Length: 338
Image (cartoon, rainbow, N blue to C red; front, top):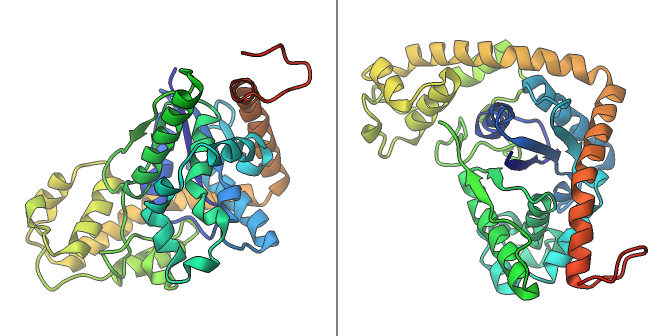
């Protein structure tokens, strides 16, 4: 069975974009793949985190994944820092990857902004850790959004260069999985930018912790334009808010954008928003309620994460041991090597 690795950062509340773009797809992939679902707390500290908040957010994200349907009995759900192989392999990849490759990473430029000299080395080398996350388990497939495709391409380059440098056929080629409608959910306040946990306005996103009233209010106040809804997907040009809201509806309803256009095309946003709000509430409320139940028992969440980390280590440790032998590290009790 092919193996999937995917991760999510424990920073702030998870939102509708995380659910439609990643989490729901993870749940669906569980039937056909061996899955490792990782809460990437090492990635989170590339920018400063309050330690208490980081612990709380890690548990909250774990609760959200479980509430959405991640099966921690059949697959590994864990937080990254409990498996030291992530950091160890990342250092090896720091010595494989080239500075020129990292200099081309657009996400570092966006996150560091104008104050690039004060950005952490961790933020700069983030893609090498992402490559280690995947290749530590020899994962073959990674569900990604469009914004992560460049990092995945770098992971493929690192794997290929490692194999070439040491004359081995060790790390596999990694294939991206970009699935379903609304893989890139945009802000409710600006259809040209991605829905984000870091945007200051709560009205820009629907959080998985929002109650029914909050969801309905945010949908009703979402930015629109003065024209009737498009009747076909080719009518979305220069209408990012219409494209975003209709794409969200398509994803929540498990249909395609053409069907949404056929149903609502020519109608006003007001009627469409009512139906969109009802659909969002019906989908997200059960997840919110189950999250609250799980978060009431943090010890159980910690147990699930520890069990997942144990399962992940069992996969990672023999792979990392082979990497040590390939690179030329001496290990106690290891045979003579290559």
